[in-house]
Image 1 (cartoon, rainbow, N blue to C red):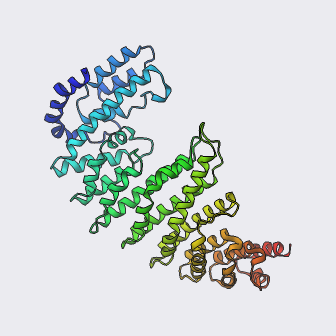
Image 2: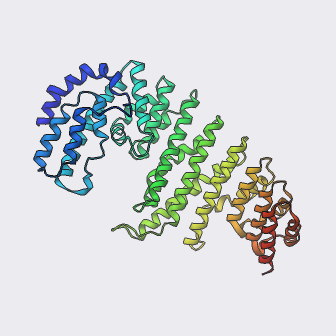
Image 3: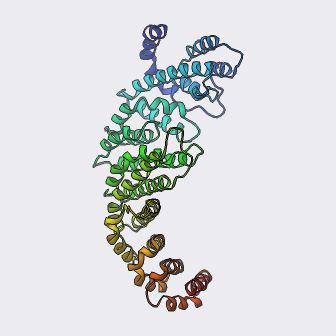
Length: 443
């Protein structure tokens, strides 16, 4: 009750009278040489103290937080690394969590006022500051916690009349610690037909979100199945962006599609110890999500393999390679009973065979990577692969040899003879691959 009265009688009037006036200087990033304001230093000292009762700590922290005069000072206080984690379960940590949550609310209200301002300069400066201080993965946590309370306001800016502000708002939305499902609708509204900058920003924001999820799965406490379940809400948006008229948007969305494939592969191959209370049903759920994502992405990725832009075709090949790895993992787990790409494999093989004649060297290399993953399943492409032994690019010739070996008994007639012609190749790696392949084929 005391806190509520303080907000009504002291904080809210103070905020309304000085927030906008102070914003021009209060949201600016401090220079490296700048000394933190005295209340921030005092808060740090209190947080470092261990010989305090929870009551004393609460009183001391609130006494100093009341002295924070600007939004910048509130932000600096929130960014202190000394706040105790609530997970520790200690009484002081609970005090810290409560006081910090109130600071987040306080900062959010100040930012909300600025975002609703009609002054373009104020909004632009605030958004610039927020995007800059959240770029580094190790900083800006207080700002991100604050922005998670401002998703509606940021969503309005994202599809507003100012493209520059919209792009920065989209960047922030891609970084806030909220479920992906809560952001998809906001991103969709920002895909304005006349604003390629914003469409590119959305695809880049999704890429950043997926990159963070991938990093999370690699940690000791990572749960790929759960990460895939939470982030898969962005799939329809990613597939839509792969059809964008702007080539940069298509390229970035294909990067995002590849990352989705990587998450699906991590979920399909995860054999880590499950958390308490989660049994094999969790693994079945993860495999099912990976299978549905793979089946959902494949048709669109196959279309992208024929994109007019060579770099987009190469990225589509990289994405397809991830989906094929997911397929291989799922087929192994399910003992061949389920093939998420079963309905598109004929089209897939036909497209890969065409890609071996692509004018872009990188596309031909990427197509061979996909065929090697397929192994004997790429038998229908064997004749085209055999012709690729004469490709002008040494990496393509080397890759063709590897695919022919992967085909094993399904390799086309004339495979050994074709590989023998590479024993005199100009490239040492190709000659070495040919020698090794002939030994394996004889065995």
